[in-house]
Image (cartoon, rainbow, N blue to C red; front, side, top):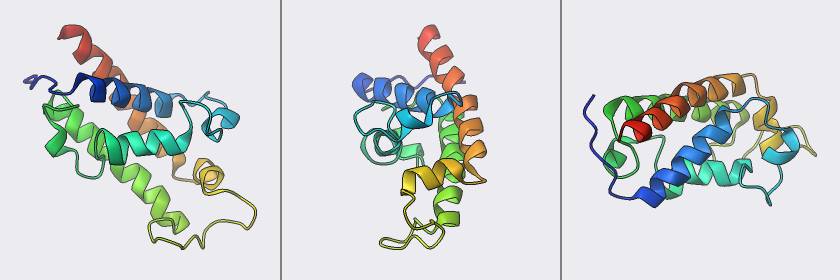
Length: 137
């Protein structure tokens, strides 16, 4: 695949770290739900959907924080998996969370959602590709 380079290397570092954190199924629940940790779920989601990429629409990030079309396609798959969890929990609609048990935080509900293994799997497919492409570059 063609390497389109990285116009924003600092963005790339954030994306690689966030995808790697999501790909780690052994990462303790306490870390994912601790806002003081890098691997905190809210921060990871902000990196991948708001600040340094857009997993829902990753194509504009080709050459900025994503190197190849394969990375873009796998990021899009990650976006689809994460959005499916959000939709299942009713978190896609601002202010609504009908799929969440009272007293359970949205982050905890996401980690417990039946679709969460698909998020981990999508990230696990993308993480080694990001690392391998960086090593070649």
